Amino acid sequence: MAQRGKALGMEILFFDPYKPDGYDKALGIRRVETLDQLLQQSFVVSLHCPLSEETRHLIDARAIQSMPRGSYLINTARGGVVDCRSIPAALASGQLAGVGIDVLEQEPPRAVDPLLVAWRDPRHAAHHRLILNPHIAWYCADGQLELRRKTAETCRRALLDQPLRNVVN
Image 1 (tube, helix red, strand yellow):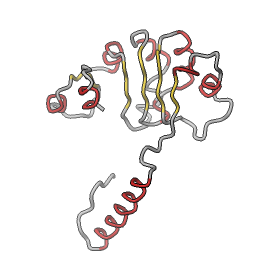
Image 2: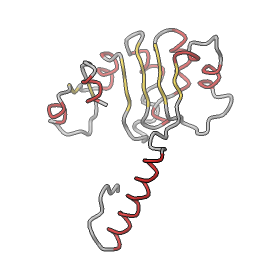
Image 3: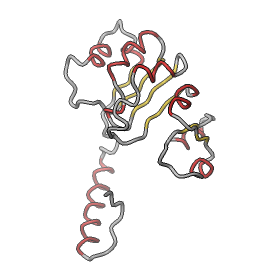
Image 4: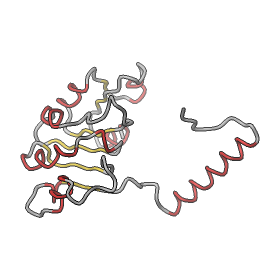
């Protein structure tokens, strides 16, 4: 995402307490020391973190209020990282100019979920300024073939006692 933003001429800031020093230099981006610093200085915030107790509702109403008015929020990480209950009011007030989400805390969402209710209402700002998209970017003919091929290759490597690739503990 950082490389894409740079290609569009954006100044890229990031906050990740677990990335080693030098990561920012290698990518030509600027590290900030706290999430608050990131939020206060960013007109576009894109989330790329796992869901854990540490990151659950990392972005809530308070976090959104600390962003510059008219900012954009993108969550393609995990649903629980954003408290989506805070989004309809932030869009209605103009605090957020737009939101893109492809993951929700509860999937499938309930029909009465406040975010979906606002999104379905043509009179609400969310109707025109919220993009809800399924978290299935890989789901296409090429993606399915690659998934099957890589699965078979991984099984073969395991059976031949070869080192496995992309192991997650």
